[in-house]
Length: 137
Image (tube, rainbow, N blue to C red):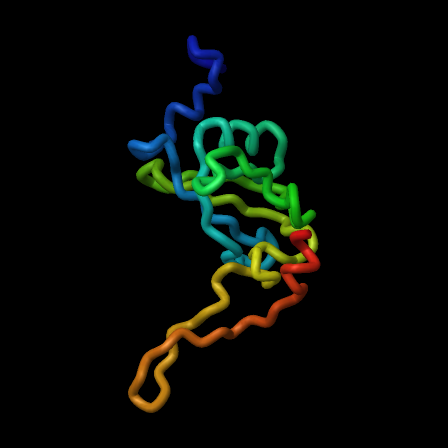
């Protein structure tokens, strides 16, 4: 069912912020690893649901960003979920190529806060799987 704007009715349940955006968490459907967090607008979420390919809103480029359009590391969406408040979307995905991060790592969450010698600092825990210069030409 669609509303009078020719928009799917389910989009009406999504609480976009004042900028028309909603945070989107990409999670590996098989392992449960959180891969990345991005933003979606109505068009990105609708296209994602229609095509099964993750589409985000790039705040820096101010346009839709089809994950993998430059790197080839697309995300095939297996499941879409909406949180209890309707203001966060979870995408369970198959991450093509095993790389979600622009740094060439599997996940964007590759740093952990550790304490060494009484001092806290961010430590890199995950390796680069592919040199970003070879991904983005």
